[in-house]
Length: 346
Length: 218
Image 1 (cartoon, chains in turn orange, brown):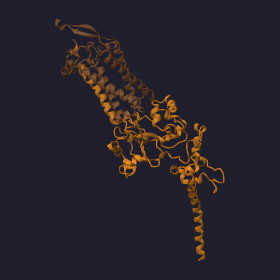
Image 2 (cartoon, rainbow over the protein chains, first blue to last red; image 1 turned 135 degrees about the horizontal axis):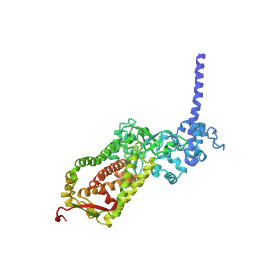
Image 3 (cartoon, each protein chain N blue to C red; image 1 turned 90 degrees about the vertical axis):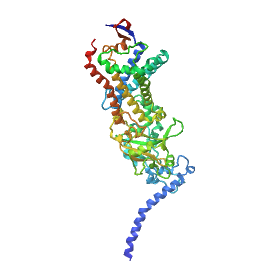
Image 4 (tube, rainbow over the protein chains, first blue to last red; image 1 turned 120 degrees about the vertical axis):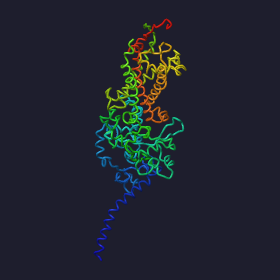
């Protein structure tokens, strides 16, 4: 009897040892948020938005993972709070970033708030420029690019900076639903908010507006149905190119100086696209779209056209037939003219 | 017996306009081909050169079109007379001219239309130029203006049906203009000599042959 209870006690001890830190960690984070989740208690600088923080990869590790030396008496002990260095976890990113020209001008924290930082797939293409615009004024960016880039304003407005200033060789197409903000004929279009789309979807999920069978895959037929649905007249699908992977080298790859890197038909990545739908917390979720969505002339995305890239094969054939039609008169009439040339010798 | 008579058919501004247009439209066709098919038509070095040249040529043609329109409509005030087919043209002139081009020309008959500064174009030409100068060129220019200002004019582009429809329209209209070039150049060789119609567009003066079959003909 005595022998049987000994291993049971040992297992209990092991279980307690294993569970205690996890319990303490969860409790600590909750405790932190008790004050830091209340802007009135701690002020704007120390406030942590719980919802925004909850979407970061950091939230899964808890506050103590980075702020290790917080005592039970905090903040009454007056001790300063330690914070881990980003490089403790992101060593490769730091090495890549430190080799770039940006490293002289900005630290990690100047661009990324660790309490709100999101992954590449969680943000829209437009949000990707937020960090850049903290230092780079839009007018300056357009002006400096206009020296060599045709339609610089359009490129800057429609593309994330990191589509070109990246170490990622590959890119993908991200579609967004946009809608007219005012009833005016020339009203500006903005990316649709989750609430607006939810109102349209009713009690169904937002993705069902486009992904009709909710199989987490959008076929060309579903895309076409969305584009042609008169109920969604005020909404359109817009697209942009984003790098496939996040990179911190922030360099311009040599091939990005060559316009035909993007403006050439048949690039494999131009076939790969995702629809980014807004979530209720301000993040985005991506749904894969069938290959070739942006290449369809009339039924694909009506507002995404990249010269040389998304040209329609059907229109090419029609255009060629028109040009051939123009040569019929010289060829046909010219032949008869040659054969009857004697009739005009007078 | 035929006698040569010189007519001052093409005034200097018209000739300048014509050749400026010709250079512009040919440049637009070739650079346009490179812009749409960069991997097959690398004529002007890099893509950027083709775009800049295309935009410049487009701008020149659009301005040149506006000057042409302003000159004929408000200065010379002869636009209607020169370019709009008359009732007679529509009822019989087009048919008569078509009959000449497609039948009697091969039999060696004379062209039923004799150009004069007030009546430069035959009924078929009038109809063709009406379609080209009042539909094709304005539409291709307007679509080009929209395409070079996508961001500021997005509202207008969406009203047209979106960037893709606008691009398709611009491309097909441009192909039609290119098709017209072949026919236009060929028809210009149908004078009494192959270069008879080219010369007045360069010098202004056209040699008109006048047949002396009977005194009544004069």
